[in-house]
Image (cartoon, rainbow, N blue to C red; front, side, top):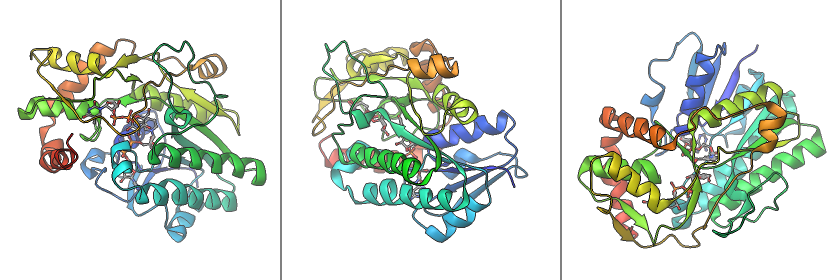
Length: 332
Ligand code: NAD
Ligand code: DAU
């Protein structure tokens, strides 16, 4: 048998994960992805057909999930509705995919005794004040703010319950904000980069004092591979790379790196319930599993990401107009 089932592998982090896992010698990877608006099939182009397969379907489809789980050793669950702003417009697919989808996978791994890794977010912990010296750790109480983060928090708690009640062989990781290639252009960094490339002024929510803890997607995925290799069953690991930056600094850096005046952006309507700050203490991952980030310079990682969007216009151009139209309707 062997092999790894990767849900949500046609999305941003999943695509990068599949590419990394195959490059590191993983013998067989199957992606299960519903190919929602967030997916891009072409992100998986060029992979070795002898070791890689894409199955189009939902993690909520119990029969399909059962069959695929039975046929693989390991399940890595990335699939989710992932965008906070969308969850404020319509929470229903978040409840379905993030909660019912996770439940469906857990029942299948329970039946078949498979290894399961659950991909989650630091947003389950709520937010921190700007001047709070504290950072999130594995023992910070859950306190999610948005429908998205509440649905992810709920999915984490399902995993913990399935470990304790049924002995499911699972681990969980909660990571901070990722950046890098193949990220949907609804998200902050690629939205601003493609705005500049399309001749649209970048858009900053509110005053832009909100802080996110940026990590390159490859470092997130290297941590996940390390947890799969050596993580202790039932444990949660926080993933972060000491990358705290406020949004204003990031938007100004994007403009500067793209040869524009640093103030050539608009302030737009703030996000409802906007979390102020996320910050991760990844000591457990570092000391117990020996993981360290490989991208230590945000500016050069960002410059390479800008180059990727510049060189891959055919990947994002077809969805740019519709993405901006959705924001414009919300005054953003
Ligand atoms: P994404 O929105 O880019 O990709 C999600 C993928 O899941 C898409 O390919 C989509 O088609 C698929 N999907 C959605 N519903 C599905 C369903 N019912 N069945 C099967 N597939 C479905 O998201 P992302 O940014 O790559 O995030 C991946 C995971 O990582 C999510 O669980 C997210 O909560 C978590 N995460 C993201 C970040 C981040 O900064 N982006 C940080 C920490 C954790
Ligand atoms: O912390 C991890 C989370 O990071 C993940 O769980 C989510 O899946 C992922 O989307 C991300 O959530 P955020 O809400 O932090 O990311 P987003 O890219 O939507 O926004 C980042 C910050 O930028 C946030 O403070 C809102 C702000 N923003 C966003 C957009 C799209 C702007 O100022 N302007 C924008 O146009």
